[in-house]
Image (tube, rainbow, N blue to C red):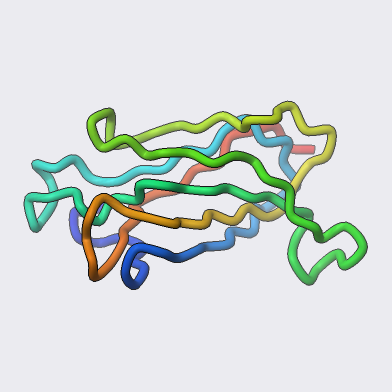
Amino acid sequence: VSPGNCWSFKRHQGQVVIRLPARVHLTAVTVQHNFKGHSPSATIMSTPREITVFVSVCWGVDADRGEETLLGMFTYDVAKEATRTFPPKNAPFARAFLCIKLLLTSNWGNPIYTCIYQVQVQGEMA
């Protein structure tokens, strides 16, 4: 979470899949970026703008139930706090999930890279 030390994706699109330590009934996903004043470049153009979140039992691990479920499509508003929490659009889910995928489809103007500092998953273990 140090300024300039982040998950970096080329250009404005990318994805990350995170395998959780246990199956979780998800209640929210939190994404963090730096404040403008803490940024090494003094901008927040590398902040993700549009984020789509999918969950699954796990891709390639449980072939009969490995399909993705859309958790929601969110906009990370840089005018608000650096840490943003997004509740699922269709909660509660009857199933618990083991994997979460963040699909970044745009940022706030950086043509070279997009950066995420921290991702947290909230929920109740199954």
